[in-house]
Image (tube, rainbow, N blue to C red; front, side, top):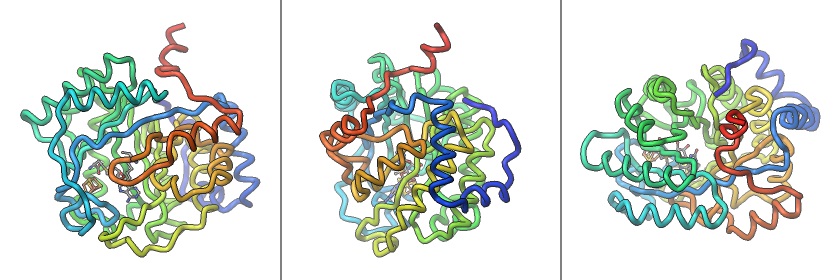
Length: 326
Ligand code: SAM
Ligand code: DTB
Ligand code: SF4
């Protein structure tokens, strides 16, 4: 986790965001190269451990009961099933395994105990472990940490100003409270958002401003491009100009120099050339595997070929910790 160096004002973020695109990408590439090995890419695999039936009303989501997406619902998977998926992900070259549940919040009891067992099992394989389970209280965060959790994914999704156009069943404050519980338990936060939901550039600037001012800054910032899922209120949303997506990545990299900037949802629709520009602008993590939680993702071959063509390679697990211990 990193401490922010300077106060990051909204005005400064706006100025940065609106720079000529190639000046912005150039600056981001310089920051990236000063803090990271620019040839390395962190490969993560996602698994939906509980699918569908979520009571929240997130307008983009295939898993909300308020939407009508065609979805095969699944109850909480068994520990063995999850561990065999984690083993397969490790063999395919992933170093981080992220488990997602369509829950509004974690509830204490048998389900959570099972998730803790999954975390212990994945952690004992030498993989970094991440979970995204909805809201957490302080005690639940502490128990996840004890079980070996590396990171907790909890996104702000969009600006505070646009938030209630997307979600009405919980507030921005609720999200920030969980992030606080995660930080206080000593778990790294993976916190980002979605672009392309009909928000303005000012909303994207505001989201980046909020993320960069979290203290500590997130260890990882996922930048999701909306996947317009049929049956959700955003199914007909116009595609965001890809250069806006590049701007978000570059600004995230400049404002959060040590953070892993993670290309998340929407990569299947994005050309290899645009993804290469995103890597130049500082993106250094991707989700691999043919599925994210419920939507498709590029095949393993596509990613392996792209990294090879660009002279890049997957990063080893627990790299920072190893470096600090050395
Ligand atoms: N229920 C938990 C929560 O919302 O915190 C965890 C799972 S949720 C599916 C994880 C994240 O996936 C969301 O915060 C959102 O940013 C992203 N996401 C979900 N559906 C998406 C879509 N159709 N397009 C892009 N991103 C999406
Ligand atoms: C995040 O920000 N993106 C990932 C991960 N965190 C859990 C999830 C993307 C989900 C995309 C929609 C789906 O596959 O259902
Ligand atoms: Fe539920 Fe998460 Fe989907 Fe929102 S994004 S409906 S909280 S699964």
